[in-house]
Length: 355
Image (cartoon, rainbow, N blue to C red; front, side, top):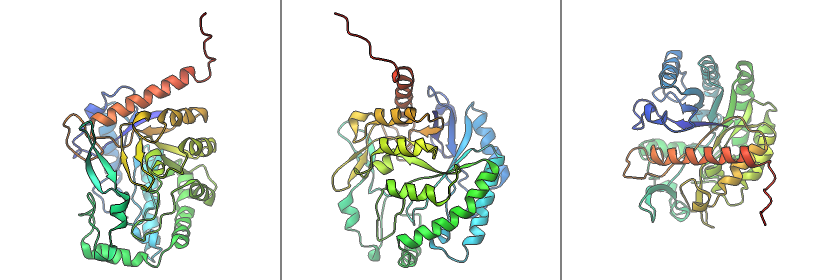
């Protein structure tokens, strides 16, 4: 298991030099953030990013993420040009030494939260999703969500939502199949593993279809193009926001198939109505058994990449919500500790108690 850390480039308040100091840190997960969605990432930018990361003694082998243009998801005539650009981005990433590319197929909203700084009893702040608050939002009257208010102008968002009224789950699956059949052969050709991220949260919102939300969806996805290059980013926090999803079982099944290429390891506290908030990584703090999940990765012989995903804002830290240094660093060390323990002791018989 290779521990990685997401970094948003030079504008990120978290410095690469600080990430390098986290014990057991293997590499950085990043992307090119100043190229419009759907366009080709220049090799010069990719090589400069790789050199910057490697100059700090870290590896750059995972991209998260290459955004999929909405026209591809909508199946519009412009998709072929955009898919060709996506294919070229796969080739360029391979030339820069990238082994895994994380991406998603969520319409409009890559992820959804209703609070960016929910205060927990210990004084820390975290990302949260209030199911009732989202259910009460009328898309026709506009959608205002923290972190997304500036993503689209109101009229742009309204027009985009109107376009999706003609796209149900069946149509979105068909558009995904068209996309996968175009990009997976390119990934195979250049030795890159594509790793689809599940929907976050794993349920339809605002009338938009969501198709990567549970075990059956994951199986349909990996079966759509039978190739080791067609794999998953198994996000425990996203899938775990639905209590029906058994994360350990998913790791055993899809990890056993060799189709998990990237793991996001975080914990969430989930209520019956689907409301949740993100907790510290420890098993006792959330609804997920992180020790059992890490053991499941060990059981299937996982040798790929993971990251601690999000973290709380603690110790007075400010910055990008969910992406501070301190709590993610604590999470990485905790997860590496679980991994070391299971590697050393999982297969050893229990000691006989002394009498």
